[in-house]
Length: 282
Length: 290
Image (tube, rainbow over all chains, first blue to last red; front, side, top):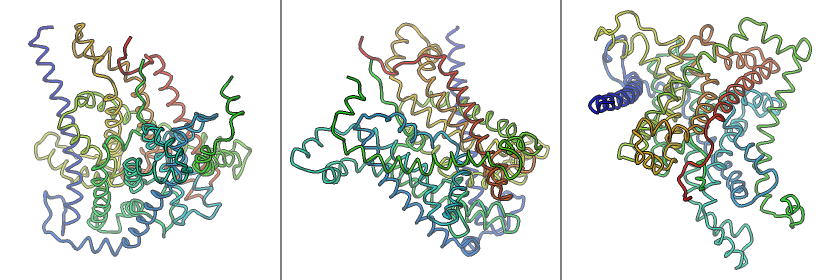
């Protein structure tokens, strides 16, 4: 190929990629901006900008959707899920990282499955079982449902993290007579602190945004913010769109604050890719 | 001596007990409901054991939901993976922008589908900024309908799915040793040939995995199909049918059957993709000695 043509093609390709990227980001940004504008709008009907500005929709939304109780439920659910996921997940991750045993592969599959199965598919049988156990519609049912993706997620994030800690440190603790519990508490937990922090922040951000499982198991008193937002948009016809948008903004701010905190400690790609395949050396 | 023998002779390792709570939890809340649902799906309110399944495949507002869902999920997944691959490939070199771009792209994932639906209703709607801009600039003068139809749901699937595919592929690409591509360049391969012969084969497992995960997400589309689509017509996806059976008709047996059919269709696509992937190279993604 002629070098001039190739340079031109190269530049065109780069421009195309940059253009697609920009188009995507600009449209998403404008979409968020549209919600923000609408939430402060006095009246906004088919013009570029609203006729006037007001903050009344926020107080209206707060009262209308009983956001104080919804936010409290969200906080309770999210912190319970993070705590329980760590308590269940970290010890399991430790065993998976350190020991080889029969059925280890089957166990890994068991922890990978919830990631591979769509939430609605496993949510409907789960909701059925929870209704039978009279847990659905309560906050405990919502917590249990949210733990299904959260606990395996902690295991998958923590296993590679524990693998890279030198087992000699544990042996040394054992030599000095520490039992498993003391070794865990005085040696492993301090070393694992960054990993535990990363895992809990990732679980936290994902739990706030997890819609399907919460939606299928929540009752009127146990809605988290995202489910309450769904019902608000669903019944939007009877309410002013601005108050729904105000609620959407409140949800967005809650998520973004935690996301920004999380991003100080974790790599953005960790939010989607759980297990980094260990590099295999030939 | 086999591993099993070694395990049988060794004194019981109490560390193994640490995995028990997690395993018990998953068995109780993931496997048991699944099996329970499977059993329940064979106990319909009326008819024989297969009553629910024959009901599903003979009712006019049930069985077409499979096609409706596939018609949304497959194009959305193809767009997402197809766009994410070249952009992630471009971003594989660590620059100042890489972290910024990945950060910006994380936002749509964490905001979730509900907020995207609400935003899209405002922004892509007939009176939204997008259609005002298009009409002002006379790119397209007719009425612009991007909400409450197929396109609205497809757009929301791309907005929520593209960042996911991008971040996943990026983490796979950055795991490939650039030395391999440099070696190819030494042998005279141009960038296109490097991509075609070095990166693409090494990426095949990651791409297949990414396609499966993105597809499973798109296939279970629910909030945007209700809020942004037309849930009675062209975007009546299979999760809406399952939800209606469970929470509007209170027929948990039929709902479980629909959930099982849903899982089965996903499994078919995932198996097909992973089968295709096996046609490609398998091996290490880093250069080694010797």
